[in-house]
Image (tube, rainbow, N blue to C red; front, top):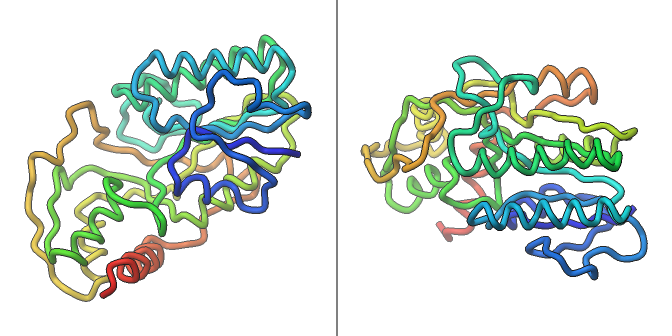
Length: 271
C-alpha cells in the first residue's frame, strides 16, 4: 500500500508516517501527478488552510479523485473543535457545532468524507485530535510554549489558566494513528477521539512543569494570549470507543511526557 501524506505540520508528518511507504506533498491540490496509477491511501490534515476557499479546493480534489477511483482510503487528522462546547468529555457521537475557524474547517472536510462515502463507498477514518504534544513540536502549542519559556526566561506568560485540556504524548498518538491506519476498514467512515481521556487545567500544567524543571518561575497574565476567536473552556476526550474497538490506550503519563519534552527543549537550547 502506498500512502500520500499532505497538509500537515512537520511534527505531524513524523508522528503518523512510522513504518509507512509514503510520499508527501505540502498541499493537496489539483495536479493528477499526486495520484499514480495505483490507488493510494491519503492521510491529510488541514494545515495552512487560510480560508474557506482553500478548504473547498481540498474537498474538490478529494471528490474528483474519489470518483475516479484513484483513492483507496482516507485518514483525516481532524480536531476536537468540531464539537459543540460542553463541560463533560466528548464522545464521538457528541453534537457538532464548531465555534472557530479550525473547527469549521475540520467539520467541512469531515462532512465531505461522509458524502464521498455515500457517493463512492470511499472508506475513511477521522481522528479528532485533542492536545497532542512532545518532541518536535514548537510554540504556539501550549506545552512547548510553557516549557520553552521556563528554559529561556524563567517566567511564563499565560492567558486563561482555568481552561481544561486533554494532553496526549506524541508516541501514544503515533501508536494510536498507526493502529487506525493499518487496521481493516471495510467501507465505513470510522471516527475516533485522540486524547488521553484525562482532564488537566492549564494551571495544573504550569505546576507540573515547574516540578519537572526543578525550579520556580514567575507566572504572568498576558491578555494577548487570549485568542480572538472562541476558545474552548473544556476539551477532554472520551476514549472508550478506541479502547474497545482497537485495544488502544495511552501509556505515557503527563509527568513523564513533560519530562521527555523538557529534555528535548533543553537539548535544543544548548543549556
